[in-house]
Image: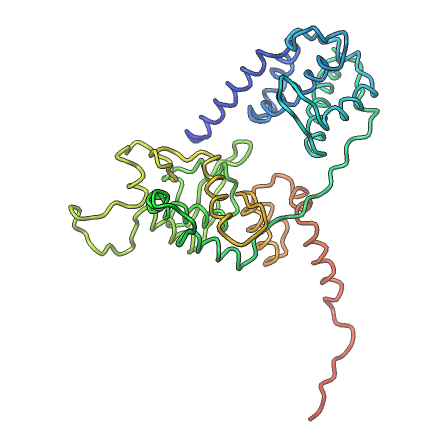
Length: 368
């Protein structure tokens, strides 16, 4: 496990512990029980969703209205009925808690029910709770979202925006000159490999193998993988790192700093591949903000994120190869059904083409 991955894991563990301090003891028992089978990141997500359910109990149940969330007893799970869960689903549409407004769409509601269902299943399996009202309700239907990708012209426009950004102040241009090579390498890496933003943020310089043209990444779940990259990615990385196949000048005294060295600010101990203006590892949010900045400069009404760049790569790979298993493997999907779900429309297109793959009639050439 890389140092960055270990740091993120630790942050999630600490976030989970902080959340559990606000929750009843039975929640701590639950998360200790699933610790060996789920990652700290997943547990933290479950914890936030279960906290939302406990908020609902305090807000809507007169028995617990004067209680603090951390004082809610385990017996509340036995007391819940399918009608209560239906009310919870309606509550999730819109509510105000401690002065903040909350809204949940169908996918958010489905996720929150899944987190609650998993907790019920845990206590059912251990014969601590016999009731499970979620078995008797209709789950929210989550509609598939249209895959948003960039077309070829938009990709060219995006890369042009890095080279020649628009509507920048002199101060912004000054910072842009420092980050241009980095930003080009990041966008090229996204579009050339389809890696996740968390994987890109976690890259160290030593994770780049130019001989084999691969990135070493830590996938979701902590598994190590190697992602191949092409010549365009290699060239962008070489420029950013100041690597030349045939150095033009070997005089170290007048050698210019590479774009990464200029950002490094003398902190030679920093291992991260992509650096912020402060000279440390770029955070996921910073990378997302950078992508958004350039995408607002091009003529598109699409809301582009690093994940959409990943989808652009996945779509292009599937159109080129028609191999859903290859796409799943390269994108790091553990279950190919996840890939099929996202690329179902293109799968249907391939099926239509397959219907006419074998010619059944002779074609007669016209004589001249």
